[in-house]
Length: 404
Image 1 (spheres, rainbow, N blue to C red):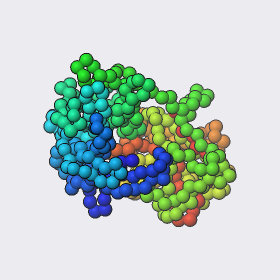
Image 2 (cartoon, helix red, strand yellow):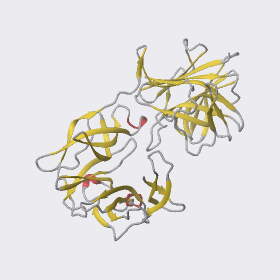
Image 3 (cartoon, rainbow, N blue to C red):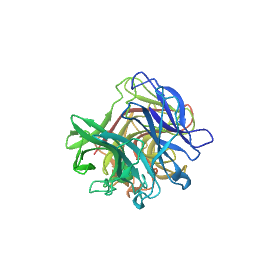
Image 4 (cartoon, rainbow, N blue to C red):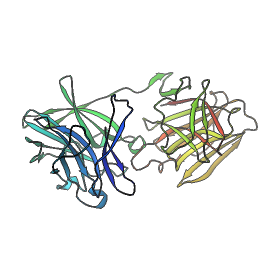
């Protein structure tokens, strides 16, 4: 696996790790290429003689410089680069703006084809597009398709790019990412698979249709995307959390136990799929000493949550690392079970509810809370669980459901 990481006190490097099986464990072999302005987007390729090469991009846009894409021979152990690098293409055309990146090369008949992306990849103001170049020799010269960019915004997807060509069952496909035009940054960059062909001029043509997969199961007129009653021995691998988070989550007797290892909140999120959705968490109040609840999460410093502590329910917004109480309700008395619901409409309108029986839900905030500021620049929102309090306190969750 070729990966990019920032070296201590320096820029980005392309490095490599290996394993005997795809699931690992991996042995890290360290960096292969570390340019002064950074190196990213590694792609391995063999020439017609079987020689192994590595293609990558100079991260010059981080320093307001050009972004050449290079190729260099690599040894079979993937432990060292051989000979000298050769430049293949760089950002020379107006549509490419400040960068070209994400090179991926495949050979069809007499030509090597390089798929590449350009301009701004991410965020609400993204301008990403994709083009293709071709060459009869892996080392060049490469010519760019005069029709570029050939993968641009359409009715359903925008800022499409940074992918890999693959072949299966006699057909060719491009696997890449893009933003949904209806949800944009809120659901983040989503994986797309699109068929392509080689036309009579020996250039790439993307076919108009996509391959799609169905997500979720319909139950009682609603689509349920994810359910977890914590009956498995391990936490479901679809749960996400901040990588610096130290608090642990364990499952015991069909309950998720979150033990706070510091005074920082613990967050566990699930991916969202649409602009309208809701999540319900079932809490065990008798076994919880921390403030526990449900949250819409941008990152560890940006979220909106509803937490229960004793008999008090509080809507807490964390913004720029600071907590702000938006609304509070005192229930006087809470039974062992408490249900908290978070509902989102039109990507940004957030409402909270509670119930003692999972049937009758009572609204807490009369006016929807605006979540427009939550998405990080290059990541999606998550909906999920929150545990907050002091080190040593415990949250106990019985179940979580995410549905449309």
